[in-house]
Image (cartoon, rainbow, N blue to C red; front, side, top):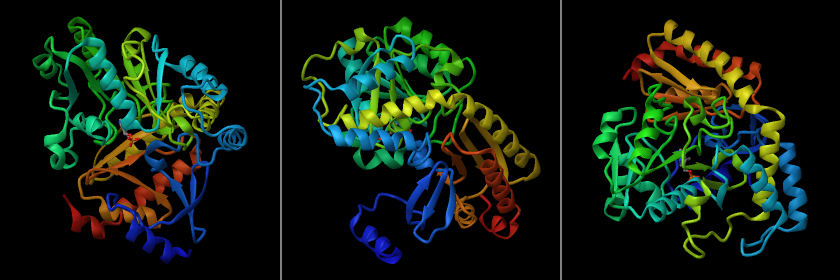
Length: 401
Ligand SMILES: *Cc1c(COP(=O)(O)O)cnc(C)c1O
């Protein structure tokens, strides 16, 4: 199929739930994506953070090829070597004490498992999530997701016992926390909403309050985990110990896989049959995830993210001094948000023309989740194009928010 046919086919047959950029991507390597015409892009979207170890990472490719020759499917009712290999690795990098693992296939599923295990373990019903929080779009995960745009059409079908506390405001959490609360769920850094960092002592206070109250603390590291922010887990920046952690996106090097990590005494409250997944823990995804974790450790990607992020965020911050159109640059490691004072629709299109695949949060925040293998020169290129586009005042005037 040629470019026109591909676009036509997707437009006609794929559910119209995605806002699309006019790019037909056909190939990728490290932080670069090529379209069907051979045009090269620096990928700052990174598949919403999935391409953590780079596109078609050779280690991951090799693991997939080798495993696919041996065994592709194997339900968890049978034991399997690829799955055991992954579990050994996951538990090694897991936050302290979270050595019991439920394997699934997407972020939302990892959250669903976390909710069920928290309810079962505590015998309580209520969950507290955060304003601005994003935890996925299946009905259970959507119940914990803040954005009214996503919730509204399904409001009556959502899990009813959810309350939202103001993210970053400990008094707001205190008000909601009673002895019916099974768990509090939070992202350590809010991704979807625009790279929002909590106040410095906030997560520690959340941990203390939940412990005192007998509620579990679920930390959703689906976007922030595996080195993205400069540490293996973003919550480590604030030295807390969650009871449950969810991880997905980058875990399989691009292959769908997710994990819910919990303390054994918590996870073990789910009995045989109370939760399961047919594809969860399949050998192919497990082999890809093992290769991904090995690569993250061998290359010390958390440190790379920290160094490159400090460099890049520092450079981008000069833009907020230079341009009155930049409200704030924030982030940790390579999880970065540039909040603008205008609607960024046209800005993103121009970045795309200049060879950068961007990502956004709402209408005025440019979000960047590039592969952690991105090169310094590529970040310099991105910086120069962001700067150049900002200086193209003609349209900025027109779209000023
Ligand atoms: C992406 C994301 C999810 C949902 O993951 P899916 O794989 O799209 O279901 C949940 N939580 C956070 C923090 C995310 O960034």
